[in-house]
Length: 321
Image (tube, rainbow, N blue to C red; front, top):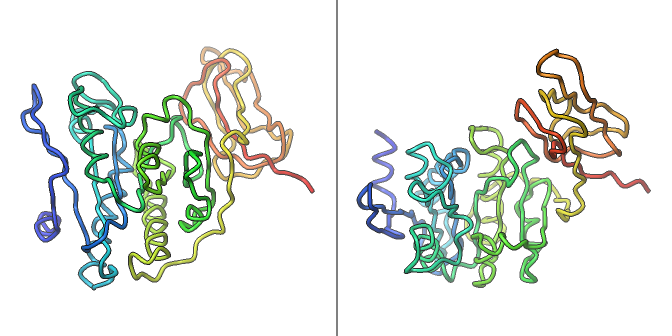
């Protein structure tokens, strides 16, 4: 009940509305805080399985409302929060758009006369045009666990120094691949918005610790950019990594049960056993996975079974002086 009352008090606005064939009117809502110049736009879940991203948005919404109530949003600054662009798929338990299985985060910049996800992408990009900063709570492109970080596309318009202001442990940069050019992050940058994707370490489950850390990172950034007044922990001095620097470790033999012995954030030494691949019929260890170098586990598969030549870890190499 209190959440419903809180929603009534917030400045709720329609970002986009359309008719759908089977579910009637589909409306995307945003919540604005403060007024004046378009300072920051924050977007949550784009896919139906991004429960963590929607949860972070809900925490963010309440925090921004509290700040606005206390007069802690700087005068002349406007923040727009859009918690979800694809709640219809979430309601149906599907990852992608329910009618054609299309990926909304591969539909930008969109087409107002196109398919549903293309129309949504076009409308959202148009509605958020002109915001100085764009922040997306994104899900990692590989299924598994990873170290929370900020990710940016290397478009020539990105700013590592601004990404450092989130105070997260790592900033990951990546050369845009063909499909990256159809993402929200890339198209925000092409439209002149400084765009950042926040990866909190989970997608289809709620991780309270990393969710709260993601909210703190955004509040830290907004404070340092002079958009809100908020006392927060200074965070990390971020380490900037190129995605190409991450070392992929694959399962080397036929697949089986995946018994992981190391996880994201763990420091390992060359030769350490970091996983066992177990024969699902006999229970014997078919293969031992060794750390190929000294470093830190950045990503780790969490599926119960893995297949031959699958990427099961990504490592940050430790460089020796």
